[in-house]
Every structure is written in structure tokens, then in C-alpha cells.
Length: 166
Image (cartoon, rainbow, N blue to C red; front, side, top):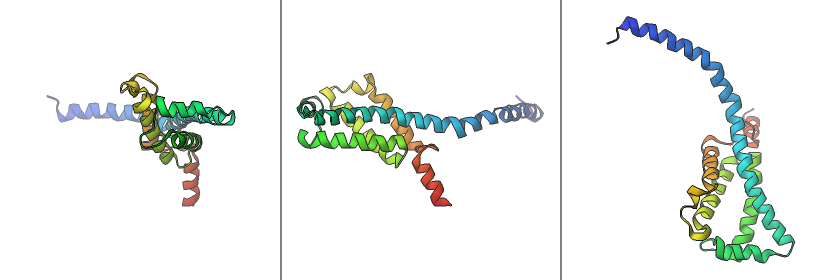
């Protein structure tokens, strides 16, 4: 059993180690965390932006039937017809991904894209294991981090809040 005098000796070493890693902790908190949040926002946002652009190009090129086919047979949206779900999804993917990447209403955009991600993951080909096997788990994890931590310092939300507080 350790005496009080022995525990004081170890307490000094622990405090010394804590002081040594404090600069690393500060670096992680003030620089790395915001960069990581920005990377998460851009990675997931770009994936949804590409999907929205693809849908828009199908609309532009008069090949919208492809999207209708996808929303009727591949990943139907419950309670919505393909004629409503396809354009609604295209707009949501374009608008929400831009909001997420910019960090404007970041938590709202992350929550909405998380709902879309889970909806697609559980309806695509009616395969319940797709969330585990595919990129949807990565997207969902990144979106949950943004949803819980906020969009970070490198976001429009941060600058709006800073401006409002002054």
C-alpha cells in the first residue's frame, strides 16, 4: 500500500507530464479539431453535392427517367412518389451539401443529411446490411460528429455568432 508521502511523489510526476502535454492539447483543441470538422463537412458535403449535380444533369439532359427509375425501384422513398421524391432529393442534396460545406446552419444541415443517409442506407435494394458494408456508416459517423460538436471555427455559423456577440 502506498503511503501519503509516496503518492505525493507520483503526483508531482503526473502534474509535470500534464504541463508537458498542455501545448499539444491546446494545439489539438484550437487547430486540429476545427480542421477535422471542416474536413468531415467537406467530405460528406462533396459526396452529396456530386449526387445532386448528377441528378441535375439528368434533368438538364432530358434523361430524368433514370432518376424516376431509381426512386421507383432502387431506393424508393416511403410515402412519396418518385415524381416528388426525385426532385425533392436533388434540391435537398444541392442545398444541404452547400450549407454543410460552408458551415451555415451546420447542425441543421448535418441532421438533414444524416436523415437522408439513413433513409438511403435502409431502403437501397432492401439490404439491411448495407449500412455496415458501405460508405454510409462513414458518412453517418462524420455527420453525427458535426451534429454533436457543431460545425467548428472554420464555419459561417462561427463568424455569425462572433458578429452577433460583439
